[in-house]
Image (cartoon, rainbow, N blue to C red; front, side, top):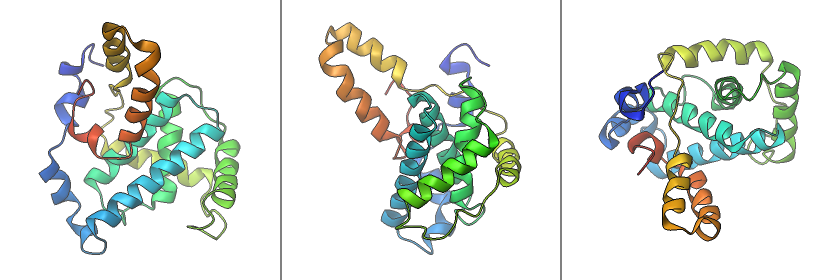
Length: 196
């Protein structure tokens, strides 16, 4: 692991150009428009947020999961692995990487089933089809695709430093924190370094 952002795999391998993203998405953009594609990514970001909140994970774990999800689909088609499987896999791996503790296998799947039924039934009105063995297998695909580059530099630390330097931590930080969380639903974490 690199001690600073400039020597990390995040900087060296995972800051992508907008043109690279568009080129990788061409297969998906033959089926859906760019706007629909963005809506799909936002939908699954919301799903991971709901899953993380239900599992009582810290926001940094959820942010890591969202970026893993974006990294995977930045280099793969949505058809390669079902996003309904990739989303809980990203949350599962992010909990390990961020040292939040391993989520129990049965709890992960039962939480997915409950969330799909209660909050996302309008989009998926069937029984959640995946089991823990699917998540564990998918985890290996995710690790391989990311070349085991698991350490991320989030915008939260630079944000708290900026707000501290401005002397308006109590006023500005909560709103800015929500904006950073919302940026995870876009391509911003793939294109820009965390301090920007």
